[in-house]
Amino acid sequence: GQQVMQIPQYQHVQEGEDFTTYCNSSTTLSNIQWYKQRPGGHPVFLIQLVKSGEVKKQKRLTFQFGEAKKNSSLHITATQTTDVGTYFCAGPREDSTLTFGKGTMLLVSP
Amino acid sequence: KAGVTQTPRYLIKTRGQQVTLSCSPISGHRSVSWYQQTPGQGLQFLFEYFSETQRNKGNFPGRFSGRQFSNSRSEMNVSTLELGDSALYLCASSFDRANTEAFFGQGTRLTVV
Image (cartoon, rainbow over all chains, first blue to last red; front, side, top):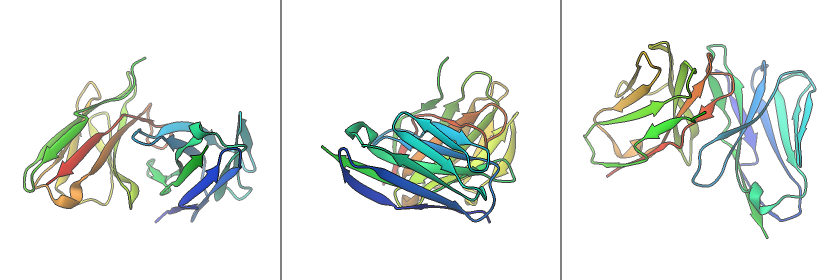
């Protein structure tokens, strides 16, 4: 069945450094969604990408959807301590459910 | 508008017992999905309900069940609890399809002892 893989599983950066997490699907996706879960919290929707090669920005966050619509990335420029959390990508399945990657946990040291 | 509400927030149960968790979706949302989150496995899909019908089911044993009421509120039940059922159970509501933007509740932290 469809699988969504995320790397790295974990990353520890110093405040001000950049961070990137990558998401790869075993099948072509109609869209890709990104969520953020703060420690002790619940996943919160960040963005959805639909078009091949699409790039969207939210302040310091840049989201990309691959040309083949099988991979995506989230890049954070100049991380801040408020960026701490786990970032999940999710792809829709044919049965209308969502498959989540296992997430990338980001730790930012001041 | 009010977000997704899950109750209770925390539960401690003994092996062999059963538990019922509740989820009230965002007003107007008809799709409710349940996920189990554990440190090693991430977010695992349990089932999705739409208009009081189970539309999709994940790969979990029959001890896990759920239902949805006419007001879209949903419950999930786990019978004969096992230690491995300890997890954060998250409910997500979507307008009509579970693979669109999902709004998560704060979850129910279940501990089985």
